[in-house]
Image 1 (tube, rainbow over the protein chains, first blue to last red):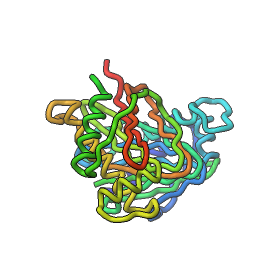
Image 2 (cartoon, rainbow over the protein chains, first blue to last red):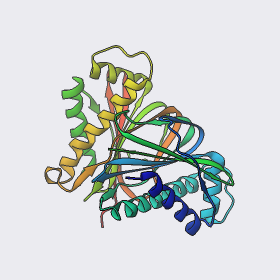
Image 3 (cartoon, chains in turn red, cyan):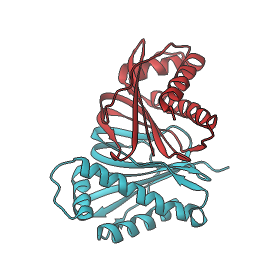
Length: 150
Length: 153
C-alpha cells in the first residue's frame, strides 16, 4: 500500500481546490517523534480495515498562513479560528485518504478532528506501529503530515 | 445518554483493576480546549456509530505515579514508558466506554492511541460535540478524563 502517494495526492488536492495554494511534497523523513516549538497540530483517528492516526503538524507561521487562505483574512495569533481551520484541514486530508484507500478496496471510518495548540509539545505513539512522515513546503514554510497505522 | 456516568464507571474500573488504585470522581464540566501545563495526555479516536474521542490528561507527577503502578517499577521522568502507559490507558478507557456507548461495543471501532506531552498546550475538538470532562482525585494529585462525541441528531 503506497500511503505516501495517497497522502501527497490528498494534500495537493485540498490545497489547490480549497486554499488555492501550491504545496510541494518533499522526501519522507523517518523522524518518529516530532517536536514542534510553537504551533498547531490537527489530529484525526480512524479505524476499519486499517486503524491509525493522521496528524498535520504546522509551525505557527504555517498555521496562520493556512487559516488566512481558508478565511481570506489576516490572523496574527493561534486563536479559535486557527484551531478550527487546522482541524478542518486534517478532516479534508483524511477524507482524501479515505477515498484513496477505498479505491484500493480498503475501508476506513473517521473519528472527529481535534486540534492541539501550544508552545512546546510533542506527540508520540507506541513504536510498534507503522509510521510515515511527509514534509510539505509552502510559501509560509514547511509543515509535516504524519501517518501512524496498524 | 449520561456521558459523565460512562466516564466515571470506565475510569474507576480500569484504575481499580489495572492500577490497583481507587479514584474519586469530582464535578463534571463541559469545557472544550482547556489549557494543560506540564501534562501527559493520551487520546484515542472513536469511529462508527459514534464518532468522537476519549482522552486522559495527567499532570507529569500523576502520570509518573500511574506508570509506576502500572508497570511495577519506579519512573523518574516523563519518558517513553510514561507516554506508552498513558496511551495504553486511554486505549483501555476507550475500550470500556465503547461497550457503554453501544450494546456490546458493536459498531464502534477505535483508532490507535496517541500521546501528547509538553509544557503548555490545548486540545480542542474542531466540530460541535457533546462532551464531558471529569476530574478524578488519586494519591499524588488530580487527573481528568474527557469524552467528546459528535452531536447526535
